[in-house]
Figure (cartoon, rainbow, N blue to C red):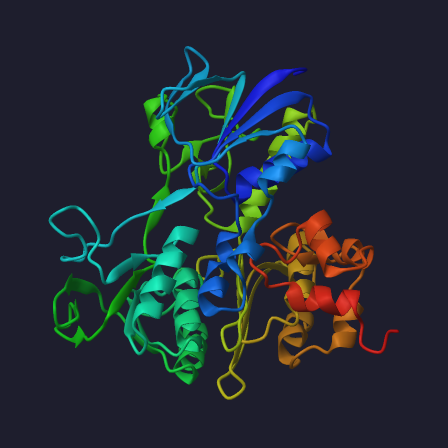
Length: 464
């Protein structure tokens, strides 16, 4: 709609991607973005790299306030929306300011939930000094301060999911004696089987990190963190990475239909009110919430096209989860543990690799790769295109050892290199520098798992 007032609540990765797409498509309306944090939007996925010391916090910034101003977007940092009125079509901030809207986008993300561990919260309602959440830049800075105050500390990471592994690795690299507590029977239980998880556990052990799986933390005491098996882990720091839920308080207050997330249709519009949209971690489509960057960015692209008059419809995102770091390389496509099909699997504990494809009708319908992501681009391409494979091809895909740089360079132009931003090899080859890649395509700025392939495409070995 020409001249409509669009208000976006949230200034995270999904919201920033939406604004970028609207600007690129010359959206003819006035955009206001309301962000609760006082800092510009940043890449949350790489917070563990800041903790590790390989990235500066400033390098995580996606778009600075000057960029928003240059494209005519009203960015309000350090502002929190108190309530949304669908009747009055406005959003009220905590300071009493009201911002009118013709169309509203909720990109409020997810909020961490405290695990049921006694002693985490003090009588004054504050977290115990030993306890640190790890979701925001402020959380990361707080943990860095605690580490700097007293060297030689011990840490326990509660949660053996992707975030928990990233944090544990970062702490180990910094020389912190680190242990992981995971209530499920093994690491990454939602994505991997026991064989894949065992490879990860071996990689963590090389870093000096012990894993206690099948055990739950129940109480924080002066002695340490007590587990439900009666054992107590001595620790100076407890980092919470387990548990989170879609942030839906505003949607509920506005009487939008909410289950786990804000329930949306193919236009990412609330099924209660077509003027209100939701994207990212707070949105629920076809009974699913995502929690990963690639679906959030895909939703942002679809919504931008819809708001600019296009007829693109969202039909659900493929699930892609990645972790890429020394000794901890993981890529999961779809749901390999709960998808029916024939399983082709190769595990090499000595090399530290585990590869699993779920094939149905000759088509890869799910996959898990641990320890070697060199062929993830090709497998993702086959998965996305639903390519029908020959009888021996799945085994051949998994039997070869690490791919060479030449094999990466042989990727066709339409092969997807960056799953987060949906960037092809051809688009990478069309850029001259890594900064140009990041600025024009967003490749490498999501999970970071595509960085090595992008660098090989930009700077092939032997080129002048």
